[in-house]
Amino acid sequence: MAHINLPEGFPGIRGPMQFSPATTKPMRELAEALLHAPNTLTPGEREIIATYVSFQNDCYYCQSCHGSTAAHHLGGDFKLIDDVKRDFHGAAISEKLKALLIIAGKVQQSGKRVKAEDIERARDRGATDKEIHDTVLIAAAFCMYNRYVDGLATWAPRDPEVYRAIGEKTARDGYLRPAGEEPVDAKF
Image (tube, rainbow, N blue to C red; front, side):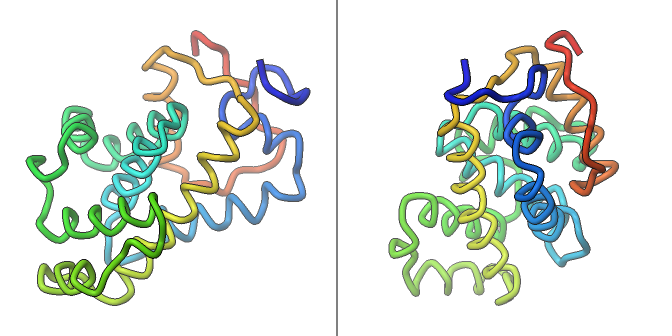
C-alpha cells in the first residue's frame, strides 16, 4: 500500500504522476530527452543504463519497465537485459557501453566515486563527452525516479507481461504521453 493516497490502477511512477500533474510534464520531458530523443547512444543503450541503475537501486518497477523497453529496442532480447543485470562485464554489449555502465554504477553510489580513470576508460572505448555526460545524467535522474517510486511505496505488478506491454509501448511512443492515461490492469 502506498504511503499516500494515489489513484488506483496506476503502478510505479504512473501513480505519483497522476497525483501531481505539475511535476509530470518536466519529468516526462527529461525522460524523453535522456532515453528516446536522437542521440549517438541508441535508445536501447540508454535504456540499459536506466535499467542497470534501477536494478542497483533495487527499484523493481523501474528496472522492469526500462529493461523491457530496452529489450524491445534490441529486437526482443530479454535475455541480454538479464545478463546485464547479472554481470554486465560478461554480457554481449559493447566495450564502450560496459565502460559507461561502470560510470553509471559509480554515480548510483555517489557522484564523487567517478574518477578520471573511469572517464578515460570510456573515452578509450569510444565514448564521447556527450555520451559520458548523458550517462551521468541518466544515472542521476534514475536515482531520483527510483527514489520517487519506492519512497512513496508505489504498487509494482509482478506479472512480466505487464512490463512487456509497457516496454513495447514506450519503445514505440517514447515518454511524452497525454495526461489521463488509462490505468493498468494487474493482468494487463
